[in-house]
Length: 383
Ligand SMILES: [Zn+2]
Ligand SMILES: [Zn+2]
Image 1 (tube, rainbow, N blue to C red):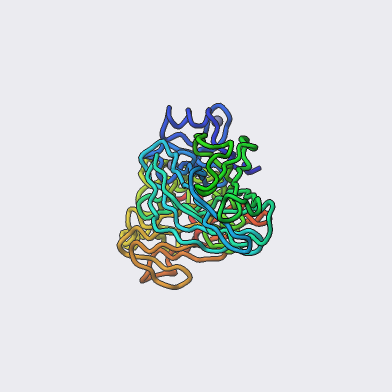
Image 2 (spheres, helix red, strand yellow):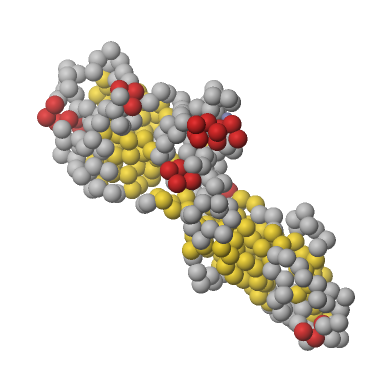
């Protein structure tokens, strides 16, 4: 019944260009889930949460470096990280790791911000040159894209094949060759010291080679970059269901968040379906179901926000009066991840007057639906 979001297609991208508020692509019927920075990038995201307009990292091997690797020793493997984004948004490289066999080793990186159309140098240490022959080094790097107080994290990797040719009579140590495993396979970059001058590759100019990169969704969870722990994630395709909010006071059920900013705003503002600026209209009702005007005024027009970020369901307190989650009071601007069974009480001083229960429906390691149940419930034909 519930559709997973696929990677955005051309028809969907045209649909949001034609109508920035559209919820669906008229051509293919897909819900349109927007990048958090949609107002700048115009990008859509699929189930993996990745905006390909904002996040376009490349790893490039640049020939010309000098390397010598004594057998049993280590060598710094140089490369460039490149931000190929076509809009004016930087990427932040938040971590770098490498491994040959076994565990990841954290590497040092002296910079973080990578502006669009910019490259910056990095290197990892390849250590286990205990024999001549083929060695594989896997490089992983984490990138963040930021928008106001929000941040999406991703991890990518690339594999570089190193050939240790053994002692050469010209070079001070063995000759190290780096080859890529991309479609340009066979195009071997030779990195040697000056003593190898006179070889057949002398003077050959090789452009930077773009390596194949892979998204590492499992490592993103293991490293705490995304997901709720290692075995649960709330993807962007998660469907929302609203129970007990009253007619037109909440979005249509079983849809992912398709608002232009990717946020569901809860508060005293009327919902879009009622002609307002909010997404979920909150009021306080008394025992008989009548609206308590006085109590309702203690709700901000935009009291709190829910959104999916880093495969987590996030709550941000946007009103000045704060709210409670599982009994604990939080003030303005607090951001926290919600879990299955959490209870949000929008009124700090009279928490029992209005409660929202959060329930997750699971399919394997993913949450397929979030149900928000309001108590006391408002009858559909009331309010
Ligand atoms: Zn479409
Ligand atoms: Zn974007």
